[in-house]
Amino acid sequence: MANRDDIIYKLDHVTKVYEGIPRVVALDDISLTINRGDIYGIIGMSGAGKSTLVRTLNRLEEVTEGKVFFEGADLSELKGKELRKARQSAGMIFQGFNLLNQKTVEKNIAVALKIAGVPKEKHEEIIGRMLKIVGLEEKRNAYPSQLSGGQKQRVAIARALSTDPKVILCDEATSALDPKITSEILDLLKKINRELNVTIIMITHEMSVVEAICDRVAVVDGGKLAEEGAVKEIFVNPKSDAARRLVYPEHTGLGLFDGQGRKCVRLVFNGVEAKEPIIAKLASSKGIEVSILSANTKSVGGIGFGQMIIALPEDEEKSRIATEYFKELGVYGEEVEAWQD
Ligand SMILES: Nc1ncnc2c1ncn2[C@@H]1O[C@H](COP(=O)(O)OP(=O)(O)O)[C@@H](O)[C@H]1O
Ligand SMILES: [Mg+2]
Image (cartoon, protein in one colour):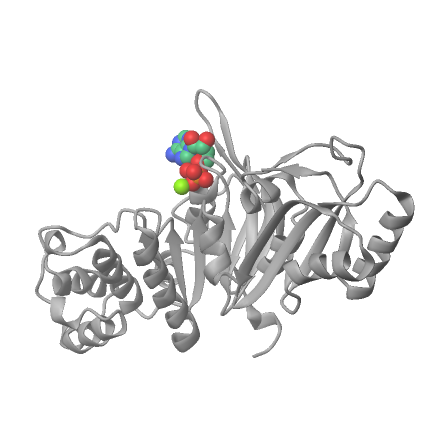
């Protein structure tokens, strides 16, 4: 694939203002690009502007300033058939599933096919194929009220996928589901991404969702883009306050030294090292003990990541030896604020 074609969405200084009382700047000068084939996360607290942002991607929401490009085309300039085509390229799923309760599973999908102008004689085959992908073939004639939350979301995914979209936009798609079902739905989305090469945009307020399946993530805070990058980089080294709050919600900054005047440093582990033995070995081989102020390890995309905030010994020589030791092992991150659970 040519490089230029790899970008599916580009937001160029996008601002969205809701004029009213009060006047709300829901998106404030957001620029970012989303690559084709990625699972791209957009994360932020409630009210950050995530839903507004995702609605600008299929022009359900007009932007106040700036531009949204889909496959290189300025969405605001598309009309009629072209706009419909661009909209159909993006299927959507929501927290509340948005199924038609008086229609069966099959009819829910058929409605989407009809709206997209797919000839009726093709419906049967497409519906069967979609239900197979989401693992719900035996529920074809069931009504939504007869399905669990996870099954309803599978129907919504089948419906979104039925018109052969290039992108699926997911707005808090797993927020109403319990952890086990969430992980099944995330696995399904991952499978759809990998096997059907559908770009997936995940709007969420949960870092665990981003951690589980996203390649890249944009952190949105108060309508602004706080940080953007590869998920593993943001996990290892969140730079913005908003990202830190999401990665380590339980932590609050204390200042560069801990209460006892010891210097605090961040150790970063990226997949290979086990964290505990390193600290134990420092004690056993050099007789130096460090205090662990906090430790977090996460599995991101199947690779173990972790970081630990430690307080170095008060004794300067011991502190120097410990620092050298960590540097040699390649885990020495930086001097940081101490964090407290
Ligand atoms: N249609 C609307 N009219 C006025 N204000 C809105 C509208 N939709 C959202 N907002 C406001 O815009 C801000 C961002 O909302 P939203 O995009 O829904 O955030 P999120 O999805 O991150 O919770 C909030 O302050 C919200 O109250
Ligand atoms: Mg929202």
